[in-house]
Image (cartoon, rainbow, N blue to C red; front, side, top):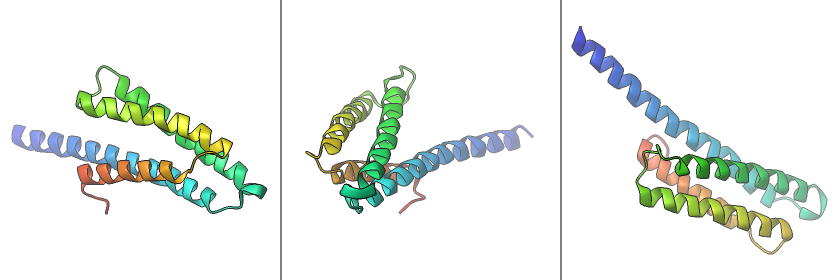
Length: 127
């Protein structure tokens, strides 16, 4: 009975970790798709508003990520936490420049895609 309970607990914990990576991947994928869609629109008409909304959502995502990696109990290696925090700061500044028309939102899409790739590698369920 104890072996079965341990197996069930391990399977449940593994599923939870996998689910967390899948959830993170899904959220980043959805926001990235919104950024890409907004990039394809004519910014003179409704495109700017859609781009601003997508940038706002992306900035919120990166603020949440920064808050998470800054937490002392975050289990990621310190160097990775520092890099993610630096990326979050870059996203905030670059997003403002995109809104001003002096930067390309494709850079933000590339960053998100890189993070998605890392999550897919950690989880193994995305390709």
